[in-house]
Length: 160
Ligand code: HEM
Image (cartoon, rainbow, N blue to C red):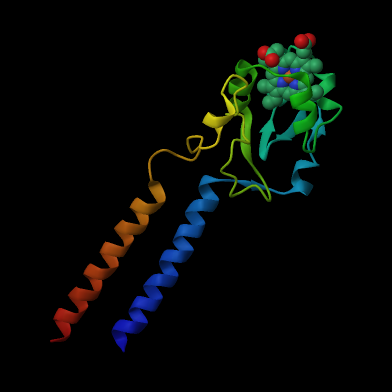
């Protein structure tokens, strides 16, 4: 009985821990939050589910600052694509990424700035994951699990 309760408690702790770690690793930004940043001195845009704080880049933007500021604070994927930005621009954008637009947390398709113009469609179907390459969540969860099991076994051995 104690074992069952402990296992249930462990499960709850691990689930909460996993959720917390995911929140820390991916900042999810709401539409309302995005809409607050519409000025030249505080300018955010969303492109294909990613949110970018482009404030420091505006003065260097080859298309000029106004064109971006005018449409800031919302999803500008269509406008961004209409310009036909180069792969260089797509790579550059990553420097300014501040989070994921709400509703796009589980996007796995070729929707981010990794969608390169020169990559054939068949090769875009399974893009490499953009999440942290080191499997932090599974490693932490496994580590905590081992610690909890060890603690449980230690407590059991002391009861005898
Ligand atoms: C993360 C955001 C953005 C980055 C990093 C970025 C970067 C760039 C870069 C590097 C260029 C030079 C051409 C190229 O290499 O493609 C460019 C041009 C341009 N961009 Fe952006 N851009 C961003 C967002 C936007 C947005 C939201 C608009 C709105 C429509 C826009 C409009 C333009 C225009 C009009 C040009 C000039 C095209 C030309 O004169 O040939 N950009 N941008």
